Length: 337
Length: 299
Image (cartoon, rainbow over all chains, first blue to last red; front, side, top):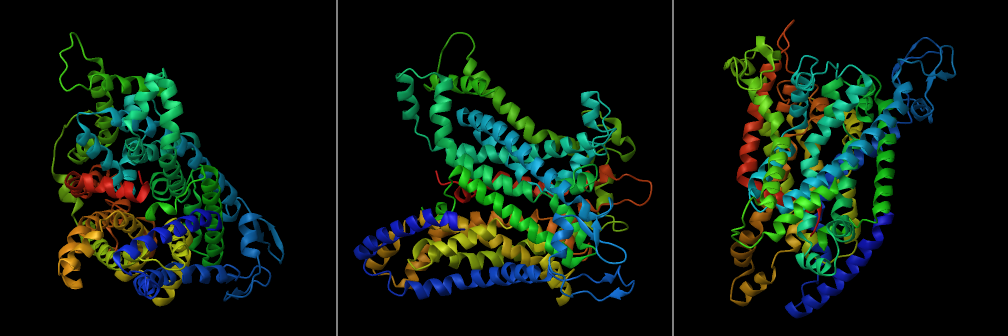
């Protein structure tokens, strides 16, 4: 959180100054605010501490313990929960598995440990590809919607529907559409086995995700566009800027904050993508995201899954921070501005 | 790509004078209609296909005729058949879970939203950052810990085991949206009411509640939809137990026994889940958009 704390601190200071002015005018509002805030925020903080904080700390602890199972070096059943050092992390990151007769070896192909890096690259690939496509088409949609002075409410309803319907349900619809005998192959005149080959399977997931989320991104960008005063365009036109220049020099810089927020939130969403690939392919054919890997590991080895969950968290957190830095986005301030 | 967009986009601006009696075609207006048609087609075409298949006889699943043929209601009857699926039950479960999540998180979030938008206190920025951090928290990262913990408590496959985690995910969203709504409210009216002789309680009841109600209602819709659509946590923490599993889990696990691919029946179930959501969107479209953009970007 350290990188976002500068703007907040600044904002908090600004807020404090304003508030002091206002409370001076309205007559002492800030005495006892601290205690009041504690009472009001208490329930939220307690809930988050109990259901997010405690389990996460507990899982970090358990990620350093062994799982119950057959001990390969002794051949006996092991109760588990013994200190295991960083072996669970090595299992994922270095793809080390316990070897028969003690020690470790490179994980065999069928082992989930050997699939970690593949899953990471697949997830990152999905993130980059879908977010880029969604932002480009979403920008196009937003520009079209911004100009529409008729049928605006029709478009608004249409755009909200893909967003409002559960991804799990939508994914089932895409399963039917992508069936080898289904309507997509029929329309395209192709005979792809969409979900059982790596290339088409990945494409299918990208198509389904782009379809569902692009309208939502368009909506966020549209809100940014509506904040731009038309006078700016008028004066640019008077100064002789053509449509292309107006887009690059005015529209794009002014919607950048809206765009940055959309990109960051979308990227975080795709990084934890589960529903769509799980329903479409169960993670087969090169579509196994990190989330799917976690759920698969969960079925047998809890402590090892805890290590994977922790790695995932650190990875997503690092990417989130990098994106916030990259866009210099001030997302924390939004609520209080 | 963008050039074309800007050009079609620019034309209507010139024709904005209320009534134009230009000779010939108004290309701006036509471009505008084409653009709207394209967006609407993009958003609704897959749903049209869902509807067509939901009413189509299962034997003709791969007929691929683009309009309604072999129309039957059997799929809808089958969707509620309890032999293989518990779809009806799952709708009730979804309702119980989503309403509980919405009520619980709204009650808790209103206080936090008020504090964050109205009060001045030390550490406010840290609290805001913590809440935002929690909202970015990946579901998978908390899935393993919760699965372990709830397993120890015997909470797997229970309503509270499904509701509580969702409350913790809904809270940051709700607090955030409420905070940004509350920050924009004309709170001076509260003081004005007191000056006019209202007691603090009256001021709260007659001024604050009517002012805050739309914001709270909008936030509640967003929380409800998020909870209704949740799949990952529900599928793992319910352990597939049909007594508590919500409709998203039921639809993904939809079966029809051996040798039958229940595509049309699944689509019927999908239509049943989709229609109430479409109605909610139709009625509350403005509110939903304002809520999404308040939580997203401040213009």
